Image (cartoon, helix red, strand yellow):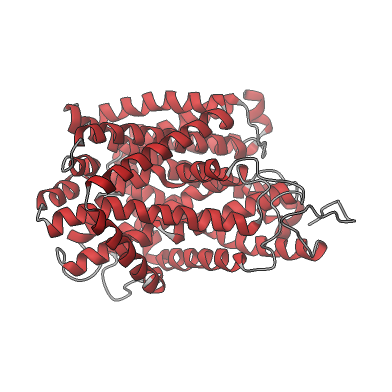
Length: 515
């Protein structure tokens, strides 16, 4: 391992930076919290607009590529075909993409927006409709567009152009062989930095919800000590999954937690207000599409932007921080698919599933509060977000059983997210090796757990959110330049191979790809 550190600048610097952060956070956690808040305020004040424009730009580019001349191009050789079936593929990318967040915020976020909407008076019919629309907005096309762009870029340059599985490889059309030098290494270090904080935020959320669920169900104290114990236990589980490998551990867990999530959701559809759920889905899809551009660019240059900072900007930064590892993981499991098939699968299918999820959990929770007058549920959610889901489930038959299953679901989503993150971090710090050593996987699993513990020690949910926004800013710039590099690479590749056939392999005279 020492020899690898000496020969691998990216791994050495990345471990050094994260180690310094962990040590500083352990001994000066209050000061760390203040610094994180300072960076958050600076970033939002001067560059909040950049997050909004960049994220909307990623969505526009992903949508345009579906209808472009590049749609039939395969992510790999023309003879390659997908290694995973469509259902397993969707399950894995969905689990890695936002599994923990869906369970954590499924009930809580609509209720938060209902009580304190982005505009207008809280607790009204308009507030309920706005709450669902903004929840769709935060979890819909924009985050999956971010994953689409980075996943497509990585898959194209890895499998079509035979470059290493690194973020820096996507910049080959712009900087050429310098991807192997200091510029490329800096890009990869920024990707690792964003990934560590993005996944640490998610693991922190998952830990808080597991602790909240255990407290609600079994009266186990929800303290920082119990949260640390939870992180340690789950770390052993996801380290074992990462040790087994993607084809066994990750695939099996992803299929399991998707089936469990679907089971819980379908149960609530049957036991809950079924007609109301479908009304919420239909109405909110229309409202979401109608207000998409307005919400995408909404800021208040002459007013208070605290709501936008706490919700929209946090989410955009969070998705961007997740993007390196989610994009790399999606690229890993997407070899052989066409660009059109890739974008349709990554952008629209998970978005539709997310909308159904929030219509079921969020729509039902708003129905309980707004239509049936159970305001205690809204109070419980806003007072302790970690127990919102479990308080919600008690309004239904078999509520205790569903709550236990929900805790299991959070744990499995925790494991799949951390599993894919350690795998991708290992690739980034192993010179793009798509089969990194188990030792490096275990090291990154340990590091992720330590960073999560430090962030929890430094404060609460606000500290987790602030750290994610601050860490994601440099990588937002990297992703913006990446769009130009991807477009340039696609144009040049299409000029070399002007025709593609989805059904039959196409043989070309020039078999050697050169960017």
